[in-house]
Image 1 (cartoon, rainbow, N blue to C red):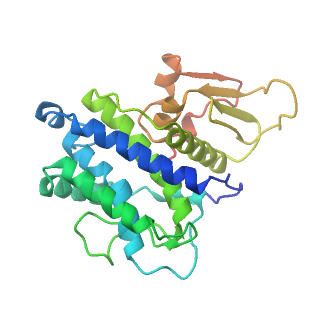
Image 2 (cartoon, rainbow, N blue to C red):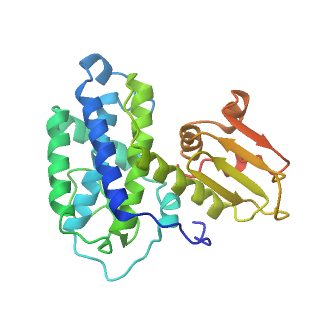
Length: 277
């Protein structure tokens, strides 16, 4: 796992909490409008159906509630910029748990309502600095079991929830033909975290990656740029960047389709992507 060499930018905890709730509400409204035909479609994520993807989206909040139910760890183990690199290797367990969750809760709106209620109750009295063990468990598993990412603060963990919600909202829109909106703060937070993760993975200042209007980062070893137009520039939009960073889009294809602009000998990010598996 690459070390978090650059200091993480700060995120306003109040805005982050609001963004998570806003994006979850958008998703719930969108899922409520899905008929059985669209719920049965392939999601594009392994063998999940759209129904299973919709059920999985609730775990973005439920994992917060479950982790708050656990005893508080003794100390912080994971910084925010460590998180994107600590999420790989769990696809099979997550897939199995998601299938069980969807099968056990055929009424998706009731599942969303219960998830939102539990989340609101537990978050109401939880301070931003409260440490979470951040176990990622399959729904229905014992509280003490699961894949442990490491202890991190609630404020940082909520930032990661914007990534889960935004990425899977985009998955759902593409698979089901929905047009679920993105909360601006959630989209900005997700974009910035993944941009900063690139700067951690490829430290340096020879290449400028621009994702307007939310993020600009310097990365990649080489001659440091100090003034004027950088010699190596990558520019793309937030959703294309998020798809590239999470393996939903291919670098070469995005270049060919003019969804990414790249100039300079150090502007090829193909070997650095995706950031998250």
